Figure 1 (cartoon, each protein chain N blue to C red):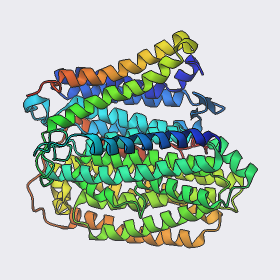
Figure 2 (cartoon, one colour):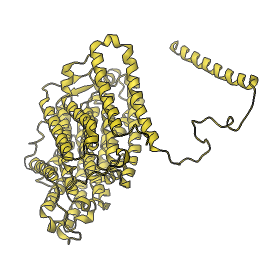
Figure 3 (cartoon, rainbow over the protein chains, first blue to last red):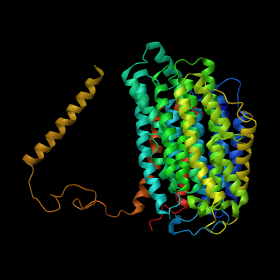
Figure 4 (cartoon, helix red, strand yellow):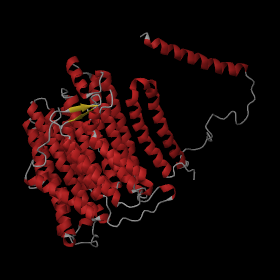
Length: 490
Length: 117
């Protein structure tokens, strides 16, 4: 297999991100201001997003010896990941960036170059995960992402909660990676392949569908991927990691990381193990438990980032509903495709609404971190409060926001394959979660302010909020306008 | 099954040599015990201290840098074996790989990781 220029073209978005990250690393010791790094990273993210869209082929194109594929599915998620990267970069801009007090040896203080290089490399890993058609490429992509995420969670070294969160995330994350790798080994042992297509043909040719070792392997793979998307019961790291991490990093984990995990999970479930009935059961359990636990436990939270963490757990459950219908046994090919695109639509709209909610948390600074900080916000900052209300309504799933459109397509897709109980559960839990989100709205609009007015936030945070708002409003008023090009993996 | 006979044989040879060395040394060798000699073998550490003491972070940095070059070598060996078959393309690919690794090295260098402060 030679280095073919045609194969490298398939990786243009990734190459842009890696190139930018390398330049940042080389210049790291000289960079002391955030602005050039922010501009460079946003430009790289936009270029990566545009080139992903530009690479959108009519026919799926594989490259590097069937290790990666570029198709409608992968490019959809790549555009989504690139947008999330751009928004998170904007959200990371602080109002008055403190001059970096560099400790001895160059550690500590603000290190804009490293922070952005890690964001870029994590996004590269996510893009590989979306493109992977081989379990080993997928593992590499996910590992690149999580290794960078561990450091990002702990990058605020002076905060002890941040260090604690990073260690917890690291220990649980390495354990999940090991499980996933063991699953790959078992799949290879049973089928003699790691490529998705080869696994699928081995399963159907040799009638291995009920092989016991294969069932264990699928369980391990599902556990590893469920950890990445923080689905119950593999969610325990998320609230701690989000709370300890700085708010932009938490936003990145809640948005981009979940989208990439869902992209990987979808392709594994639909392409590699498409003939495997047990996966549908696994997904039903993961989705149902995530929705129930995420919605109910969010009621008890007093920290805004923890609340959003449990909300993200519930939302990943809703997103999984599309894959549930895509993998269910009775689904025809068109129903399966509709299920997969439902999950893609949900991920797309969810990423922007959750980034918007985190954006308001970031805009309010320290005050936005605890739930009490939202008391009386509407009297002090009506605009910010209105934005938060919009994102909360979207997270609840109330029309005319994009949250309603998103929930509508996934619930419709499970109804079409006969999972009525799951559909009812999803609707009931939406009502429960309305309690969670509207509690914040009540605090903002019906309580007296108890804290001084928050300071103005930077232009970059406003820009990110504008984009998130536009997507949330347009995605709700004209459903499907932004996600019509979602395409199921083949 | 025949493929495993070689492995079994090497296990056997290794076992025999190890046992023979220990037995011969303890029966034929002279014994002059001293406090240092009868300590368990450790790399410069006190073998009987409680865990949880402080370890200088500098060792960690050195270990990370070691991994940087170690991983590089792991990939260089198989590459060198089939270097002729890969031709110019292989050389360019390895150049890119080493270039990316070197960025990590330059980063460590310019940020003072090589200074033993």
